[in-house]
Length: 435
Image 1: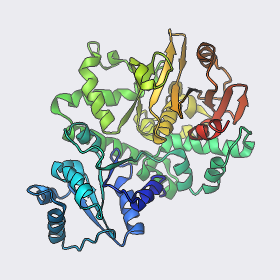
Image 2 (image 1 turned 30 degrees about the vertical axis):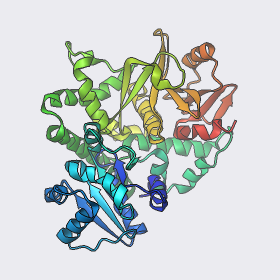
Image 3 (image 1 turned 45 degrees about the vertical axis):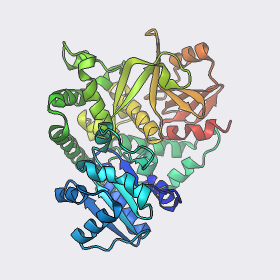
Image 4 (image 1 turned 60 degrees about the horizontal axis):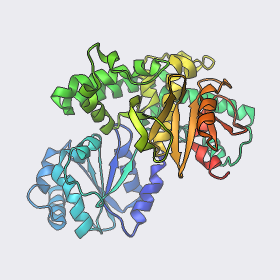
């Protein structure tokens, strides 16, 4: 299964200033599979160490963090000859060994000829709570569920993916191709981008088996809460997690703490929300008071919460597989929850921070995107509607160069309003920054 991050791994390997790699991402997004595939294809040998499966590995780092000593310990313990430049060392679930995590800076300083890639399902949580982690001594990369283009290629639809990547102007996509992509997007909204779910769909084409895998993944996340979350936060984390489908099903998708309980207050749940964010399980979209650069300086206390994967959202919402074949109901179901979550997921996978804008309860623009020192307002529609009241309100107030709308409509430009089909939204910058 091809992952676009593979290209960055190749660049990391070839870099003359290479540092130890830290690959972050939620559980079961494919980190281990990607690193092992990369090692098998690009190195003469590799050594895989999993600190969760073999807790004794931690003791190899306990008393001495000199790379030479650590390498000798690993080589002896695993009876393996580690060669500089030729052997990739994979430290998986490295968050279980603070000493191993701390050793990465010494490898960068004293033994850069040895290639090390570290990963961990809850690594974001560990790093957020580790004081003195050597910033600047490692290279960070983030892996997410498969994006829509990766999903197309997993299904063998490489020609469609290539076609979309080559679009360079606002010219309508031939209608048969457009409709085929809408149909495939509906399937993606159900299956999502979790690698195991996508692999099952490509193997069996059976959505009931896909749903079973999604339910298993969700069960595994709940077990992670019980195993790894601070005991005093466990109930709050679970409450937030289970509330997300209902929060997104509202017409106004702002996260409402009162939905967790009549007496729930935001300050009581801040730590729990941050835990889920650091674990890579949710994405926060912050409300901004005014669209000025940098957007992060103009956020207020309101926010939305999206799930890391739209397929998992469909599973949590118990969306029946019949919706994949019924007209376009899946796009508009639950007030467009899946459509908006899909767009959030695509933006995050392309390294964008999530923001949205509201104006005195009369207008809301779903996403405000900061790109190349410009601000792009993006309204998401779950159908082919041409209504654009909120975009017009925003445009009249701030006079942006472009107004973006993502919907089931074909690619077209109406004055300053740029209409993107939902499946093409990740390519918006490739069209607009050339204008």
